[in-house]
Image 1 (cartoon, rainbow, N blue to C red):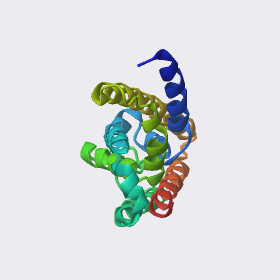
Image 2: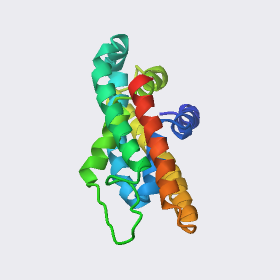
Image 3: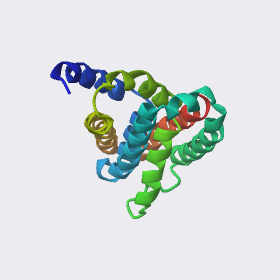
Length: 206
């Protein structure tokens, strides 16, 4: 693959990744409540979802699915309702993802739950499909073997996605540290819960 092509591809997909969206907001939210280390599990699931969407976009399946959005609707509503429910719990300082107000209370959310949450958010995001359908195929040279090209482009996409999610999760962790100095745990939960509510509504209706 030519350096000229990569010099256009990398900044294009970096801009797509760094732009605030559902997955980045989710990374920041979990960075606030769970910290960056635990948020990594969500990131692995999200990157698997993004990788699947990218491959299907190149294969043309995504174009068919976008033509018939009814296939998405139930999946989107279920995922959005689940995130909305978690957001309400976090806003009330309840549930496993909320920061406990008492240091003696430990609340745990499994790595698998976080992984699935990231995967569902990535796969059920129609805007993610639209971006990949519009932007990825033009970078594929039809005169060259598909698998090596797709492997390189997919590696770059996932690396950029991972870096951007780390940035957002790190920002959430910094906010948590700042507010916890003043012992504003309830406020922190409400900030994180409001973000989660927003992600849930976004996923279900947009």
